Length: 378
Ligand SMILES: C[S@@+](CC[C@H](N)C(=O)[O-])C[C@H]1O[C@@H](n2cnc3c(N)ncnc32)[C@H](O)[C@@H]1O
Image (cartoon, rainbow, N blue to C red; front, side, top):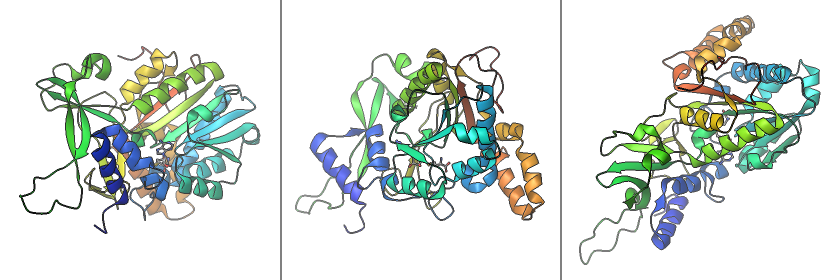
């Protein structure tokens, strides 16, 4: 019993009292439970943590995003003031590199008010320590002021938001739940003392699966899984309304397909290794693929401009990562810089799996690094 994750016991008690919970409820507790949630208790990013992200691989990533923000600010007409917003800034590395690069443009720095949306206490402390600029922290985008244009950046934020899962059965599409695994015990033997979790299905199928899950579910075979991310969808819709009202642009970089699909993409990572999603809640990073196509459609429906989804590799090349790498190589460590560049852009590394979704108020003449929308979404 001593090695049992405390959150597993808390989840088991809750399920025992109120019955199986939805996957998004399980994921929300695993990630942000105030006492035992993964992001509430530590700072797991980096070579010595559970996983590594693009800004931790190379300073080039944050620097190019800083220059992207300056370019976007100029396209917006150099508003003063404006809000530079980062969602889920992690260790603050991206913003440190971005502001160093943007620092050459003094009027940008003077007009900028830095706001960060961060759920994790330890991460907030790290960000405030590393970033030599006043930061206003928030728990939600709703708390960011509404009286000036926004330039928003989110790298590997959406993949951490809780998802719901639905499985095709002979009864229809049923919601996937997390329940308690009650292994039968032989009469006379004590009940197993270590609770364990398992997936289950709600008996009742959902109504209107195409309306709720999209056209991708047409013709799906029994056993197929469809996912939705209610938090991500609400956020993109609200952000789109804000971009229209306040002006501005946003950039989401994350991993997932450019076209909506089916499949179970929920995964757990601990010490850079995949592990079981249900066995160590609160002690492993849980993520799921981001459905960029669905988010772009939500933004367009809300009246914002969604740019065609780009791959991270194409986006960074367009912003000039190879030029930046060549110039950095002159100062030494050329082999390391080349390895990092390739890791960020090569198609068999992060270059293809990671996608970039740009959003703006309608009427903005494009965003650096992204193709222009010529004929809308297919
Ligand atoms: C995978 S990390 C990415 C960190 C950083 N952007 C990077 O690229 O290194 C996810 C970040 O989002 C934050 N986060 C996760 N869920 C959140 C939520 N629901 N609300 C606010 N922040 C959240 C985490 O604390 C962490 O800072």
